[in-house]
Length: 281
Image (cartoon, rainbow, N blue to C red; front, side):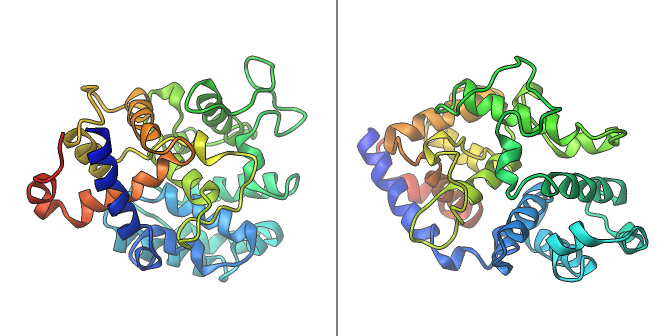
């Protein structure tokens, strides 16, 4: 059974983990840049805004880039207070100007102290911010390491004085029992390394083996049809269950199968029954 599903999903990874995938996906936004910090900033923002139709997500991200004069990192580091006024018009669904201004405040704070956003996902990112357990830790598969890293990031992200409480809904964590779809998708973009040219692979301190599969509605639906998810609800434990199954196919890079599950869900949902007819479940 595992061999048949693996072969099927491997073929779909090969089909969708391809440069042609980039144009119509939010990952096209960070692909507009070559500077590491621009890739990280707009990758994170594109992942955060990734709900709704992909064409709208891409359009809103390009609008945001234009408001930052086409150079997000430079704008964030060097802007003056009057420069922020034009950002008051930016909104995508429930993400509004308050959220936008706080994101800019956080990025300026972080990049004033660190070269990469990767540091924000690792413990003890500042001398004044220490994880709840007061210990350092290493990422280790989808166990406590990844969970702590994501919980740590959210606490660090909202560690600045007077952060807006409304913005907390835009950055999830396992402690909220969220699947953390957007954060996991962003981590996939930054961490995975292969020759396809889709994911960036610019981070080296988090291993592809440690990633958790982004579990959106499309991935969830296909994974259940393939019996890779048995848990009734969709939450953090569901994302772990799915990733554990995918790790049986490729322990070193389980999240590459996100391409297959997402592609089947959003690109081929019309022919799903026929596609699965030849797969032994």
